[in-house]
Length: 493
Image (cartoon, rainbow, N blue to C red):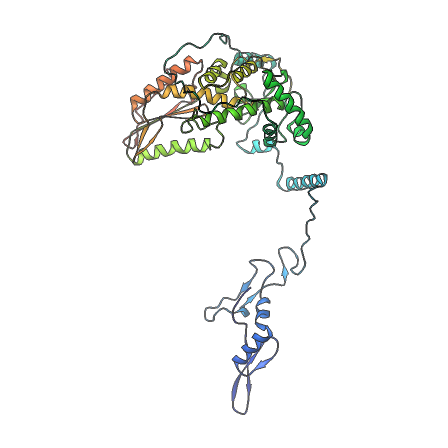
C-alpha cells in the first residue's frame, strides 16, 4: 500500500476580510485550516481510502506524473481500472484449478496427460529424437548390409587369445587387505525396492519386453522377483535371460551412415539389471570405504563425484596456474580405442582378485561374461547372436564400476614413483587424472612426462588394449609460455 499525505484540494473564496484559502477533503467536507482537515481524515479513515484508490490490480501498471518542481503525491499516481494484459476487469476472480484428490490415481494421470499434451502443442515436439536433432544435428541411418555388420561384430567382440592368461608384469600395486569386508549376503527387499524406485519408468525393456514400470506398479510381483534374485545369489546361478541383449546403433553425428559413426547400445532384461545393480552398488561402497579408488585421480563412475566437470576444471586450473606463476608444465590427453569393448575379461578378473573381492562374486561375474551373447537390429534386419568374448557392455549396470577397477590397476601401476605436478604457492596435483577411459598426464618435468607415457604404453600392450593416436593431444608450457617445440609420442606415433 502506498503511504504519504493524501491529496488536498485548494480552493479560494472571497470574504469580507479578503482572499482566504479553503481546504477540501476527498469525501467532500471543507475546512478552514489544514490541521482541521488532517484531524478529520484520521478519524474518518479518508487517508487510507485515498491511498487505496491509487493501487493497481496488476504489478507495473501504476502511472506517475513525474514533476521536477513538486514532491511526489498520491494525486499524481494513477492506474487503469481494467487489466489490459488479461482482458478482464481487475475485480473479477480468476478461475481456480480443481486438482483431483491424491487417491484418484486415474484422474491425476488423465490431468497429467492433458497438461503434457497442452505443453507439447505450445512448445512443439519434446521427444528424444527432437532433442537429439536440435543438439548438434545428430541424425542418420545405418546403411551397411547384414554381412558387413556381422563381420564387424565378430571382429570387434571376438578374442582369439581369451584363454591365454595375462603375462606377469612388474609395477602392479596390490592393495592391502580391506578394513571393511564386502557385503556378500543375498539382496534384501529394501535394496531391490531402492533400485526399482531409482530406475526410469520409461526405460526401454530388454528382449523379454518387461519394463521397470511393471515392478513399480505391482509390489507383489516385485516381492516374487526378490525371492528369485535371492535364490540366484545363493546358488551362484546367473539366469539365461540375464546374459542376452538386443543391441541398437545410435548415431553420433549428423547424417551418420557408416558403422564408425554409430555408438552401440545394449538393451538388457531389467531383472538382470536389478540383480547386478545391487552388486555394483555394494562394490562401489566397498571400494570407496576402503580407499581403493583414489577419487582425486579417477573422476568417473563414482557416485557423488561431479566427475566430468571436476576433471575438466582441475586440468584447466593447472594450466592457468602454470601460466600465471611462470612454471613448467606438460599436459598430455589420451583416449583409449574402443575402451568399453576392448577391456579383456581376464583384466577384470585380475582387478577383482587384487581388490580382494569375495570369490563368490568373482564366480558370478565370470559366469556372466563367459556366456553373454547379443544381437543387433537395424531398420531392415537383425543379426545372428554374437558371443561377447571381450569387453563390457554399454547399458549393463555392473560394467562401469568394473571398468573403473580395471583402469585403477593401470593408473596406479603407471603412476609409479613420479611426484605430483608443482603448481606454485604450495599447490600440487597428481601426475595422472582420469575420467573413465580419458586419461590425462600432468607433469612439471619433461623427462617425467616421457617416462609416464612409456609406462602407460607398455601397460596397455600388456593388457591387450591400445590408445587412439588420432585423439592424442599435448600442451607444453615453459616458464609460463606455450612451447610448441616440445612434442610427445604415444604408440610410436
